[in-house]
Image (cartoon, rainbow, N blue to C red):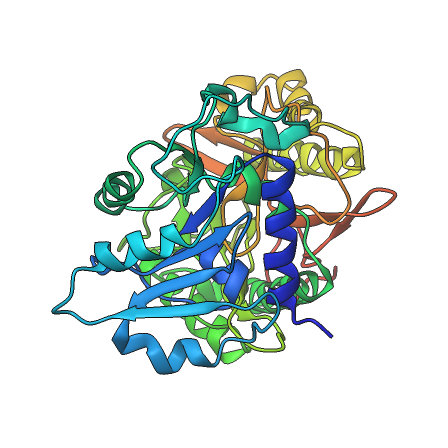
Length: 414
């Protein structure tokens, strides 16, 4: 049976065919990890995956990675690993690799033709609309450093260039069962940490934001997660009015609302290779008794979040879900205090499509995973945000978080 990464590469090549694209080039990024299971940090060295519409996929890499790349679970389609030494010019190897591929018109990269471009259908049309007849079409990783993009342009001067997301976004946006299982585990770990922090009640008083953030990250690791998915947010009192506040030495006071936004990566159970998926949950809690204004605002945000979750189903647009949450908050008179989108997709990256925001007419489909996180932020007073991850199902939405969403602390029930 083909490995997950073999299936993903085959699917990618089919999408290149449908979009009349000749070649996709990935840089060390989530796209490279998604297609091969190989994870590495970007550097100035040329480490590039070439996925051609016609020809054998190739991975050009520094020789120091040779042993690691030999273990990748990819046999069909075959993946040719081509390495270079530090005293060699990697561009010479890249030109050699490009010469092994054929373009849609049967030419080598760098040549031109006057033949008419094949009509492109559906979402994969993307940036190919700007092509001229005979140009070879190359899509490069959206994260690729400019210096490497320029090197590719030098190696294929007559090609037209677009972004890999034109093809890979629609492939990555629907999660498979292995990805969903990892995201569920990440959500469950975040739930357990959320319950533990909430249960401490008034013991939280006097703790600094930074100390509590560090404690949350330690708990995530102790319960089976890896590194934090993003910088943990602990924002107490007026600091909570900043949606992305950086935790400080502010000491939590009695009756102060605390925005807690955190999550960590977990490893997917793959046949080989690497794939890490994050949790992302926000709760706003209070040690002690909050003001009546806070109670009212928290109730509004909780209603907005619930309404948005209930609005999620296949065929509904991302903008419609955003509007559902926003209308609840606007009707309550706090529209100007909801200052960000309702949600974002989650996968190998913490923020990826689909973005749940006004103007995004993308229809939701089963297997998409995204956050629902409305908020109200009152400058100089407090902020409230409640966030869960949801997966779009055949009939609606499944929450990947199930910890209490109220503000009460101490011994609370679900």
